[in-house]
Length: 390
Ligand SMILES: *Cc1c(COP(=O)(O)O)cnc(C)c1O
Image 1: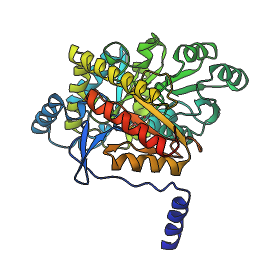
Image 2: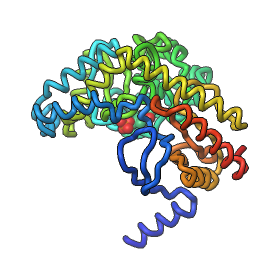
Image 3: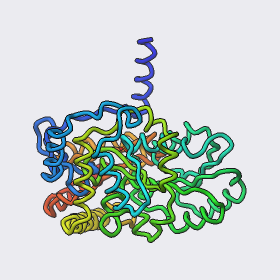
């Protein structure tokens, strides 16, 4: 058995795909300490800097003092705590949905929701670049999977005409996590109507960042009311942990009865619920607007800087900025070289992205300073030239 494990590891290593975690000291701020060295953090999804915001921390501490550290069991077993209910009310008001249901993480939401809604004999239409947790949910459901080329709604229409029988579900990231581009939401809504399908949007990277008051990508595109399942997470821009599905009251009831990741898992603890609640409130205030403005400014500044340095950077306006390198080994050399220069930007390899599209995925935060970013762009340009990436 040991030999099998070792040979599997060797195989992963030979392919240049061995992964390791890195030890970081301190919070997910703009600068972190890694092995005693100061680094600029350019790969955290803490977009608005809320992960170490005093308002969230204070809410968490107060919740621990009042409610303790654990929820004790699944909500169907030992009950819903007041904070679960308060957070669900806050989310449905934020997302302007009839109701909302919490999940323990984005991964748990996707693997719980999809099999609760469709199964054997049904069809799921899924963008080729959807997040792995969506793929896992699809596999668990047993429904037939029809993948469509990334954001190609014309091709999706052809595929739906051919395959949409029985119940069908269209599922897409709102903002694609490794590319930073947006789904064609208006077109997906149109297709869902024509073929009488359900539409689910995973807005892990849109919640708190996009649209008025950070309500999300569907709201930004004016189709907030046309998406049947608006899934989002608290672990990224919202600086906390966990996830939600903003849905109709009926859909919520079905999920409570069918979603196995909701039914068979201890619910989110008080400290986390309180931080999420504080974050949902904060992002809707003028302070939230200010953070989004700063984030947008930083994203544009960084994108333009890399473009001027000669990199092929997509024309999107999200805080996710990829440099697609291609080969996995060159990508990791790029990432390592940046590390030695004091920049922490993780290389992303298969199976997170398709083979041949390994990349550096930079993420901007509202808390980066212009000086940080100017220096980073110059450094990335130098290293990119040295490695022949630009
Ligand atoms: C991060 C992410 C998830 C998973 O959310 P977690 O709360 O981290 O489990 C799901 N979908 C997308 C698109 C993501 O980027």
